Each structure stands twice: as structure tokens, then as C-alpha cells.
Length: 266
Ligand code: ACM
Image 1 (cartoon, rainbow, N blue to C red):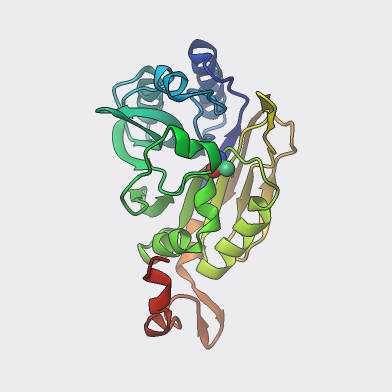
Image 2 (tube, protein in one colour):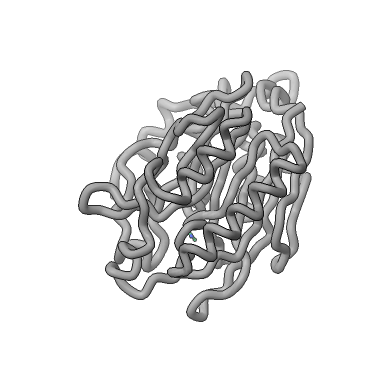
């Protein structure tokens, strides 16, 4: 069994020191609870509602050199996997990224490919497909928040062998939690969506972080206001079984030659 969980948090935009203390508190609790795989929200180091590009740049750090990343790296060194959303500075650009750390190593940086609303005003979109990370005999895929509305990403992760999708989020619309049940069912994977709570500059975040299984069932769900960690022990190898009936394999039954249209740009 693997103990998977999320931290639902309330970072504040621009309050980097306070956000780092929130991280330390959460990681201490996760250690005490022996969580193997922990997912934190999107932009957990910086907060979300920037006012302009300079504001966003002033909240950014390099991965894995920044102080938030270093804390995550250190936490992961005792045989743990952790992913957190980080406002990342790289060369002259900033990205809405997820840093992935396991066993004391920086294992991947995923840069959000599908930017939501005003994010397009400060972030550069990532240009690579979502990554997978192998850890303790299982495969973990990463995508960030708004990527949920593009089912291609969850499908790509399933095709790359992901048992679970790790999904740092800052959700403001009401659709994602339900949609992720479908992403899990259609791909036969687990998903851990770590959302944030609270309000920033008039923008209210919806909480409701959750763990969903490959049948699309919600195993764990936080309230809108919850702050802290929730976790559950699961058998991730259940995601190896893609059969829904004795004759229906969710991945092998696909008809990719009929789907060519979906890889064309409009
Ligand atoms: C979102 O992608 N933060 C909605």
C-alpha cells in the first residue's frame, strides 16, 4: 500500500516568508503521518493573484535552487515523493511550474502548458508534454490545475504508464472536482488534486481537494475551508487493470486513426 495525500493550504500572494512557514508546518505534519506521496497546491510559494509582471517576478524562484524548492528537496530525502506548485524564474521568463522531488533528488519540473485567464499576462506557457516520475515501483504523472480541461493531458499520462496523476491546483471555477472523476475513470488512474483555499484580491478558491480512484470514486475530499493534510492508503497497482468489462480495455480499445483531427490546431 502507498500512503498518498494532499495539503490544502492558504498561501498569500507576495508573502514569501509566511508561505515558507506554512510549507514547513505542512511538511512536519506529513512526516509525522508518514505520507509517502504528498501533493501541494499550485503556486504554493507565491500565492496566485498577481497584479502585474513585476509582482509575479518578485515572487519567483529557481527550481531547485530557491528556498521553497530546497525545503521540499530536504523533506523528500527520507524516501518520500512530494510535488508543489512554484512560481519559477528561468532565464528571462517566469513559469507556473510544479517541482517534483523524491528521495532527496529533484526529479522533474513541469511547466504549466495551458494557462488560465490572467496567468497569460505574466507566465510563459510550458512547451513540453507532462512528465512521469518513477518512485517505489509506481509511476506518477504531473499536470497543473487548468490542464484538467484538456483530456489529452491525462490520457498522455495514462499512456506513459502513470498509476496516479499528481495535480497541484488553484481552482476558482466549480467544475474540476467532478471532471477529475471522469479523467480517472476514462484512463483507469488515481488522481490527487491539491487545491488551495481562501480569497486573494477578490478571487475565491474552492478548496475541495480530493483523491479519486481508477473507478472515478472520490476516496477523500476536503471541505472548501479545510486547511491541513488528508491522506489515504491505496494499492496503486489497481491502475494497471484497464478493463471495465471482460471485453473493454480503456487504453487498448482506442481508435487513434479516427482521432487525427484532435491533433490539428484550429
Ligand atoms: C487555474 O488553472 N489555476 C484555474
